[in-house]
Length: 263
Image (tube, rainbow, N blue to C red):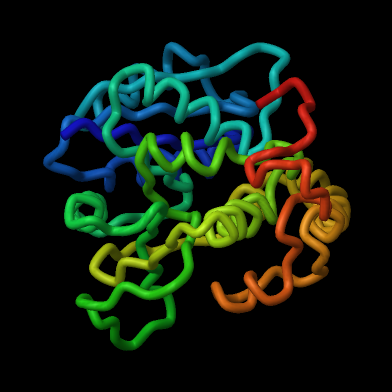
């Protein structure tokens, strides 16, 4: 089974570099795994040095993408990594945050869920502040800290919308598109991870300012796209409250978004 793992990173501070390497150490799977690290700011080392670190730590092939002058959103990074994974024949693609520490069976539990039929898109579950987790449960929703999908998911629901810059609301947007398109999203409780949460903006003041600046713009873009200010918390709410098509335009497919030239 070939698994592509996409990890967007902004590595401007040594603490984030160490955190990222720790996350990579916890990418454990029995699959033929390939890691695609999409860099949007690489100041702590060169791309070659980062590649050497990954080669020593990741149990599989690793690719570092560091395009000079190109700054992708998180969604754009997911797209770029997914493109590479699909070109390499990935049967499943996982998008993993660099501040997530996966339990050793997390990725394989997610692949097993997909092999059993699963859903169109499914995620693990953070065990932060949870006293007990029923490992047999699979519930509505998706946590894009650690999410997985098939090539057919992209074929059916389209690429992630990179107009959410640099992050926030791109996950709510894709969840909505899957639900509105008649698909299913699930949280797989057997696939568990610890999420440090927002570590880039904690350690990188410039990134924090950038995110804060764009948060309101992203929220307004989401409102214009789907007709709601607050993202829905469940499938039924999406179906009840959202526009049926992006920007309430019946001519648009669910996968449509304005092309900013940086998918």
